[in-house]
Length: 137
Image (cartoon, rainbow, N blue to C red):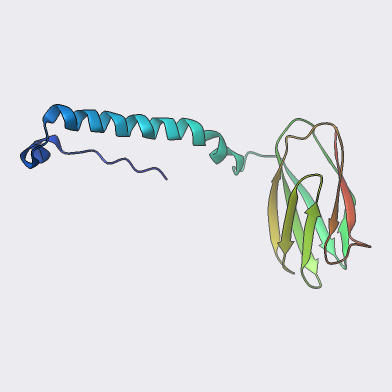
């Protein structure tokens, strides 16, 4: 949330500040707030519900499904559900992501946009059995 303070010109003039100087300060504050909204606006939409979601489950040290097909060139949300037993860490060096998911919990991982290709991931706690890939087409 961005807060902008606006100086009350009538009550501030008595403090020795000119009305013109106070109005300049207000304009500067509003300009900075507008700039921040323009710069941060795209980041707030990233976590929105409007992203396509793809489900991935980890159970008994394995990812199900092992291959997740996603659209190339678009951001998306990977929803990882851990059915246990125990925690698992979703990790991908290629995607530069890692996230520990406790047993019985879900995690949302925002990814993309990805170029067409195959991106591997694995479970840090079960690296021999918990393997998978995301295929961007």
